[in-house]
Amino acid sequence: MTSTPKFAHVVFQTSQPDAMRAWYCALLGAHVVYEGHGLTFITFDEEHHRIALAHIPDLERKSARTALVNHVAYTFDSLDELLERYLELLSQGIEPWKPVQHGVTTSLYYEDPDGNHVELQVDNFATADEATAYMRGAEYDADPIGVRYRPELMVEARRAGTPAAELQTRAWALRTSPELPHPMAD
Image 1 (tube, rainbow, N blue to C red):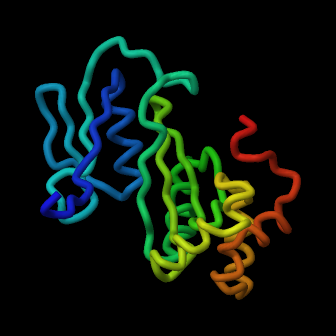
Image 2: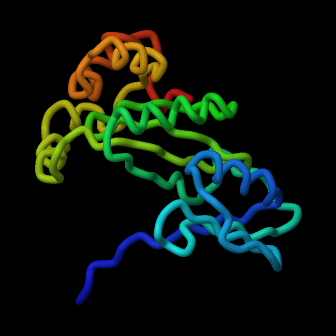
């Protein structure tokens, strides 16, 4: 390719556009740019739209056995920003479906009204080179999925002054939440 593309938007087909609009606006702190003719365009930044909803009546909800996109992901600049968003969403009744410490990222997965998954994450390394080195290492190779953690414990630890770098590790997740099942267990 002669140029490097950047992510523009994702389009979801849905039979419940009102619920999906409200959910994505809440999740991402987004707003509606256009709505009409069975389409809704939503953005949260300088792009004219990042999410589009196409209203198609009588669709079935996504299941774990559906061959579609697994999830879309959004990166925050810091662990504090990710945890702040987590708390804001909790106050709106939106809870993470599955928190996962991947090692390379600290992630919170959410499930929208149609069953699609959205990952809110923070990179655990300062540079892409450091992240790539970790992904080529033994810990990642032993389990590239990672382990679950309890975000409420992370919030408590951060408020108590635990450094973000300590919390953004598999070791912390395993030490504080060893009883949680592997992320792929359900």
